Length: 358
Image 1: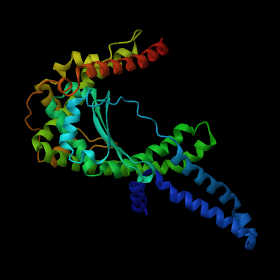
Image 2 (image 1 turned 30 degrees about the vertical axis):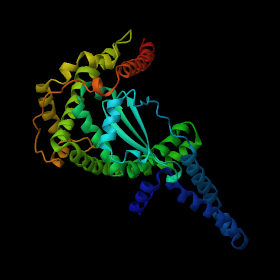
Image 3 (image 1 turned 60 degrees about the horizontal axis):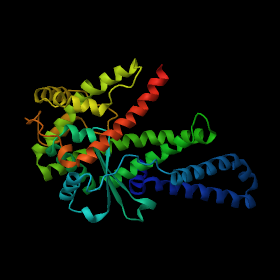
Image 4 (image 1 turned 120 degrees about the vertical axis):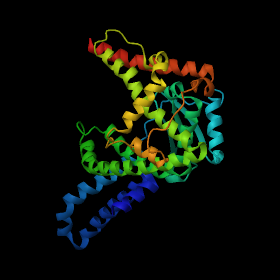
């Protein structure tokens, strides 16, 4: 039964609630028809039918009709990000298969997603999001490997099955976002009905995500080479820790007693680029992360298993990071505008926290 539920959601996404709505409608119709011949039995079942069927129908309609929260990250065209678009075009041999959007966000990460409205009846739209810190810290070689990894997700159709599961989870949680379980009866009922399902599907999603990451790593390695993919993984893992140690943890401490807004993250990253990607520190940090205990709730498999999947039993020898990819993959105007935008957005959020903390 669980396997059937999972396959249905992987295929239909949020539209997997349609069978539930159909069953609820059929139950209501059968109950009404039973009044003629089994009046007493129908009256006895009334509390169950009159509460369960409308709740199931309302919940299904809520998941289907509630809008997804809009992605507010800016999109970039070929003039703003000529290098990124060129890499994507080069690595994705089915580039004209669907609509494409390239977005930039403020995370040290990259991702790819696929939207297919109305149960897949319309053309699919693929969106790749690349973090500006990733472009600032990594060189073009590493970014190319990261993009190859995301393209492999799309080529292996992880963006259809996996994204459908994610869409169902997001749409279900969206109901709770609009109907607060602590303040509304609708939200409380939805929480009771969805909580266990979301928790179970979350575990299934993490398992599926681990399998997909292994496959995408191998798919990317076929495009850029196993060593290049392993190098990108080492840089991602090590620079994540270096960013926390040199930028985000100090910034968090400054925010605790701040009376004015501190220097924003992207400016801090620019000022500490040399320290963040120092080769000796990166090797030490990567070795430490290799021995670290895996995070049980992470959607990515452990670092050591990802390297082993590529054929490496330890940290491969990596050469120093070259010129920042942002200088080669984005136009100077776009790089400046995006940096200013993200820093200004952070300042606004930080200013509210500083004012509240006074």
